[in-house]
Length: 324
Image 1 (cartoon, rainbow, N blue to C red):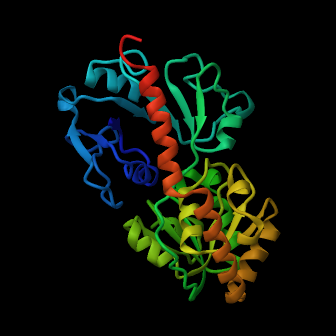
Image 2 (image 1 turned 45 degrees about the vertical axis):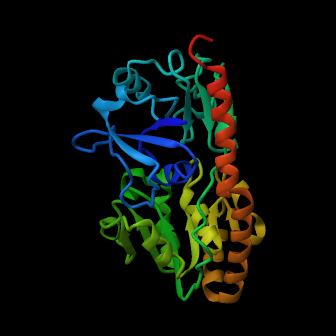
């Protein structure tokens, strides 16, 4: 298939483009949000190729994978075909609902011509999807390999834009965790975090994925402080690396992290104590990390993810052929 998708979520797309299709990634002159092209900090295969936005009409697109509300209009303008009516389409909802959550209605809820794909069962449960046909395809993550050494008695955290995202990402909780164990934060726009919080944090500004994996695996434990997120792919990557996990018991984390792989709780005292215990006991940390890796391989393997997507895309293409 020739699949049009925008580079929106680097980690998710890195898994998605590993399938056996031709992935068309739009490019605009300034490589802004509506045309970033191929990822620069993630390893993408050659079958994910950049196409200038004004040449997309020359491409024989089979299906479009939408990830943001305005992309349907972009696709119609750039391709001359309306997703869902003239062109088979699916919409991947990466995010948890915001606002008055029990009453949050998805923007596709009144349409039945675009399949709405939730990346977690939590999202499927909490979004009001209305009459939109829905499917859950859980994350799949390329296996970085078991790299855990845990030689640094510190906790690793991966979060993008922690200052802007604030309470959503649990940034306000970092001081309490930092009083328990030293923290290292990886991600975009983390450089100013120590000054903002008044904490002696280690920061790693937007490292390439390969380098981040190597460095993260040296930390004794992985901390997942998010209050409200779909399911951070960095959490799954940390588990695959072999790190034990300490996580807030929110959204999908309670499903992703089994008891033998770490500690998941809503109690701050329980979480800080767990960090201290893992840092103080390397053998226990390593054992929990092995369980975390086994759990992630079983549930979030790349082969299952790509197989689920192939099945859905074939269904959508068969049902939405032009003229049907």
